[in-house]
Amino acid sequence: MALQSLDITRRSASPTASPQARKTIEIAKLIDVSTCIGCKACQVACSEWNDIREEVGHNIGVYDNPTDLSADAWTVMRFAEEESNGKLEWLIRKDGCMHCADPGCLKACPSPGAIIQYSNGIVDFHQENCIGCGYCVSGCPFNVPRISQKDNKAYKCTLCSDRVAVGQEPACVKTCPTGAIQFGSKEDMKVVAEQRVSDLKTRGYDNAGLYDPQGVGGTHVMYVLHHADKPEQYSGLPKDPQISPTVQLWKGWLKPLATIGIAAAGLFGFFHYITVGPNRADDEDDSQAAANVGRKEKEEDKA
Amino acid sequence: MKPQLIQRYSAPERINHWVVAVCFILLALSGLAFFYPAFFWLTGVFGTPQLARIIHPFVGVLMFVAFARQFFRYWHHNLLTRDDIQWMKSVKTVMQGHEVGDTGKYNGGQKGMFWMMCACMLVLLASGVIAWRPYFAIHLPIPLIRVALLAHACAAIALIASIIVHVYAAFWVKGTIRAMVEGVVTHAWAKKHHPRWYREVTGKQK
Image (cartoon, rainbow over all chains, first blue to last red; front, side, top):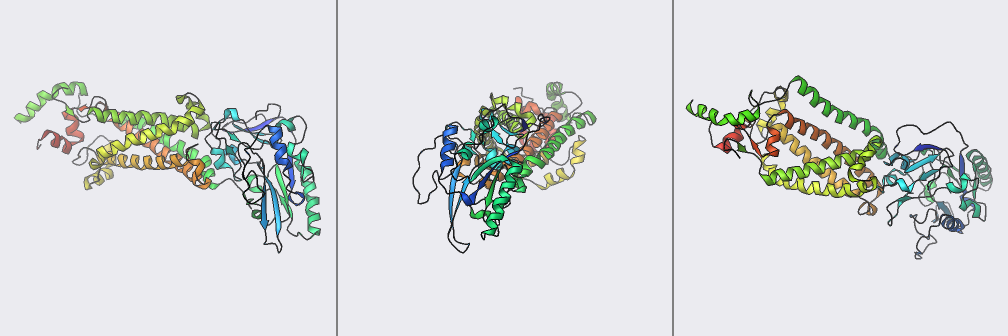
């Protein structure tokens, strides 16, 4: 959603730099998976604050409902039953946009200003500039953006940029009854996470750790995981997410190559023409040639 | 038509060609707009950026269908022969304005261009359909769409560069554009650039 009250550091499809003078602190949302009880209050708060209502779905045998992110569900709880850790564990993860420091969606977006990154780290979609091409869906390493079937615009979690802009925490943080979701400066959140991780380690979770994947430059939504060595167990959280090499190639290398190729074709033609000159069927130009053809034909026949 | 002139393309063939050409120009401009941020304003060829996203694929399908009609018109004229290989090897001589070999309706370069266009059109259609929102992409896996987007851009760039060469060749060889606008060429043109075709259409042995 459009918000001019936050400083923008990066805009999609904008080759020149955004204003950089004002420096604000980086913020982060920290989701402590180990203290989440899966109550879905965050889902409800998100829906309430953002005025989005996903259709009431069906029970598919697990707690997941809605079963997936959508244009009307910007965060969903994912419930995984994991037995590989020597016991049955119920791993619950609040899924949604990770607000990457190096956002694949922004990199892929062809529309100027449809995706913007604020200096505090929030990555936001400006739907009024969205053209509905779905490039952001291809760019995202976390499979987060969703194109609305109603208006063909891309939607995802805004990290409540409207609330953050006026000094409030995101709605999901505000509502979380166990304090599993916390919000503050990224620096502070790392300290909080460190405390939680060392606590988890004393409780037998040797592989507990902070999920702040460096492949995307770090994220502004971070997880404390009891099994940080196996993030895939949390409903497919990628172990080493990065912008797909295919997208990197498409949005990176291919552009200069294309410029060279297209320019070469054009320049070749230009210089060929001014050096070699036109290729005429005979010395006279074609209109004269056409008129003379009859006469020439006769001459040729005689010969 | 003057009797001295030789018919090279019939009216339906010319209409067919220009349908493809106009589609191509619209697609290339809007496609470059999606590819280069600095050229995003070129989405204006379809009115607004959103409209460009909506219309581009439909025009693409029209171009493919129209091109397919051309394919069935011309493929048998474009089978490569030993003469064509000779032509391609002697391309430097050709570039100096000298003809090489006993060229039929199309020379080696034109045939190469024909097959290049066919390949690009196929890749563009297949990848374009895969990436087409909201109709098809929504049902397909994201890694496949990523590959399709890359392939679509690569094929489009190859086609744009090829078309620049195609247009330049028509402009360079005087009398060629007339063949696709008025449908006719002069005897001199035919004799010089396509001697074997000239003998075929005129029935002359010389």
